[in-house]
Length: 132
Image (cartoon, rainbow, N blue to C red; front, side, top):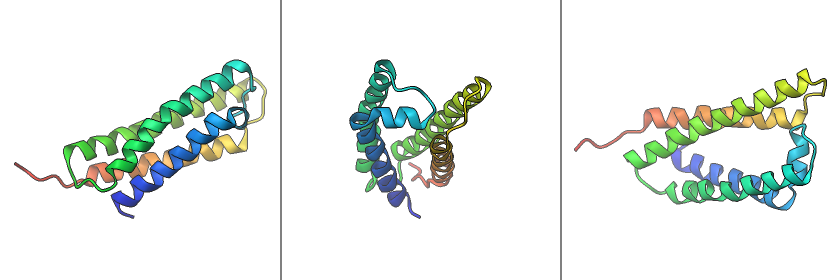
């Protein structure tokens, strides 16, 4: 896989999640073991709106040659995916301790975020930069 392909897949993935968050927020909230309320669906919609920016950046970066900016985006994306996975793991632990079942779709989402985190950090570490 090339960095270009990673950025294209990332952009598509984020756009699909953003659209789901904007159009069917209750589905995403419930897939993570939470109750769909006015507050949680409203927050999900807001997060969907915020996600459009990184999706666009990822799409626009797909043809950018190796640079400090591209490496910074790869590094930031990798760390961001791991931070999201950790937050979701904590949520699932709290749900389990509260006596609720751990929801399968949420676990899949955690796994996807961990994979994206690993791949982004791998490419960030391998980014060849031209020395001035």
